Amino acid sequence: MKLAIANTFSEELPADPIQENYRRQVRNACFSYVNPKKTNNPKILHVSNEMMEELGLSKDDTISDEFLQIMTGNKVLEDSKPYCMHYGGHQFGHWAGQLGDGRAINLAEVEYNSKRWAIQLKGSGETPYSRNADGLAVLRSSIREYLCSEAMFHLGVPTTRALSLATTGDQVLRDIMYNGNSAYEKGAIVSRVAPSFIRFGNFEILAAYKDHETLKALTDYTIKYYFPEIKAGSKEGYLEFLRSVSSRSLKMVIDWQRVGFVHGVMNTDNMSILGLTIDYGPYGWLEGYDHGWTPNTTDRQFKRYRYGTQPEIVLWNLYQLANALYPLIEEIEAIEEILHEYQNTYKQEYYTMMCSKLGLFNTQMRDEVLVKDLEEILQLTETDMTIFFRNLANYTKGDANDFMKIIKDAFYHVEEVEGPILERWNEWFSRYDQRLGLTSLDDTERKNKMNGVNPKYVLRNYMAQLAIDDADKGNYDLIDELYQMLKKPYDEQPEYEKWFVKRPDWARNKVGCSMLSCSS
Ligand code: AMP
Ligand code: MG
Image (cartoon, rainbow, N blue to C red; front, top):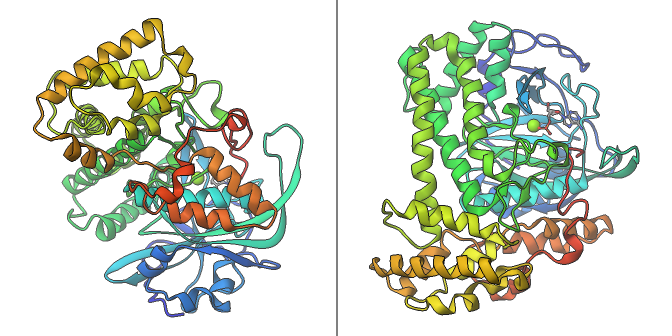
């Protein structure tokens, strides 16, 4: 197996001088060296072909024993020294101090086709940042991260990627619902890949310790490798950096809203500085369109990270990043301008995106009202987001009286669509029809364009759970079936039509389907 190792993070930034693996508070460093834990009886369950090719690996490489041993922690890549990153973060609105890679270990950075990739093992044992936890991951959460990160990539949403999914042969103790019922589960490791895994929290921890020298080094490093269009070393450069992170994060969250993805734990340690979706934990996909929905049971009470607030939370998180970068910039007004810009641009981009879901590709002033009304009506009775928008593309101009035949499959309780609710729909469709009358696209052209923004297939919560249930019994076929299907989420793929359905009733209140905890 040939990987062109080109480590920069660990070569150019200050390391924690201690190399033993025990829990500690780390200062004046961006990372600590640590080796992955050996695994007992590792098995690769799945490899992402697309990611394999991105890294210049062949099929033979990925079925080799070397690949298996490296991607499950038993062997370290030649010419590389694994390490975990030092970061802090705001969790659920509060500063949490040092966090760091508690169960993720960076193996190396590699270069291929002029691209830089960091390869990381998630679930490969304790690190200096593991606090009171074991550094391990279980199969269910690993399947969820593996499938979802690749699915998001194919949906066109900025994300970290996954290369391989493996079981370790070791048992891991978990209390899924935090109710005292601990049980052993299969241990697993995902090898995940991204240009870099640097988070907002990497900057925050250095600012919190007033370690401005290392903060500057980390910022200059990040700009040099990941924002090469910016000139580092000046206040203008750091402001430009903040602006760029802000616009990348904005693009990411608009995409989340478009496809109905709810991250579930948008703490600042889970915000990638590159604007990638990172750390797939208790995430979920909207089934019924509902601004108030969160999959995360830990967040049930305040619903801080519910679907409808995700864009505001990104802004809140950007404020924390801005605070961290302040010592390098020292210009409050210029910083505030960038954050205000996020707010304004967000509104614009959001409505443009929502209009595209409706097949309106040249937006007009009054479209905002059409979108707002639709958002309201969609929440009057449980209405499946994916099915609604996908089927809306079948609408033909002039057919406003017959709208029910287009959208009825999206309703969980079609009998509730009567009286005032039916009236609202009637009224909305007649306005929608009038608005479509002002567009130049014909029905077929509009449908084709809409199908490019409204996915037909997403990783519904119950689908991942079915794959997990099978995998627990040793059957991994469904992992591959979902993986293959989710490679082309915008295509019709009639062979997978059975997955273009509403959430089945059994999944409504099942753990893992509608309720997830951080216990992974
Ligand atoms: P998360 O909310 O999963 O992103 O994790 C928040 C923090 O807890 C990070 O510092 C993780 O590395 C750490 N963490 C989560 N699970 C574990 C685990 N099983 N062992 C060690 N650290 C963990
Ligand atoms: Mg995390």
